Length: 113
Length: 115
Image (tube, rainbow over the protein chains, first blue to last red):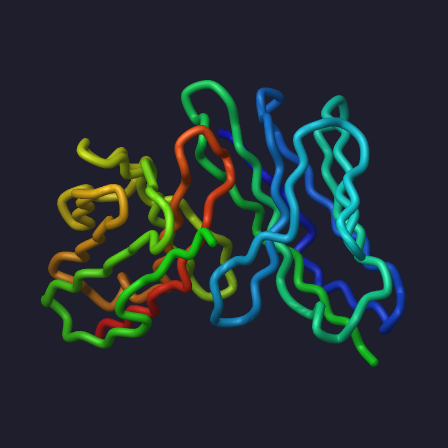
């Protein structure tokens, strides 16, 4: 069974600090990786996606992918209280599951002033 | 661009009734739409994949006769929960994908409460 694992948290960081969110996946054929943010009662909103090994930066966010280790992470620099939300890692598998997203259980992040 | 809407945003119904949820891509054509369900404090679980003009593909454990999906046009997919029961109460979210792209654009979700 294809699985995506995240630490459910909660992860608590002070305002201005770096928040580090981690995700592992079981399917080596996975091709693309997405980080979503979900506020309570709302649907997920895309933060960023990554396809290739290495780092991808977008503003305060950096996604890191290591396919050999089947590991993807999200760093949030200069964390703000408005970043407090559940962060969902989603993986797009290849093969017959192409196009489908499998979500992790999410990590609750709290940024305290 | 790439906006997906859902209607209604919230619905309360009696046990045994059917509820229809609409998912529309407002400014693009979506060859594929997905339906997810999210229970409190849980992650999104894919229910089915819907391709325009063809039958939906349901995930294991999802009853296709209970959750009817229709994708009659490139901008509209509907999910009908038939004979709803309290255990069907959940947050239903659709997403849409443009052909050739992997990114999914999510709708705002529909909160279903079955009394």
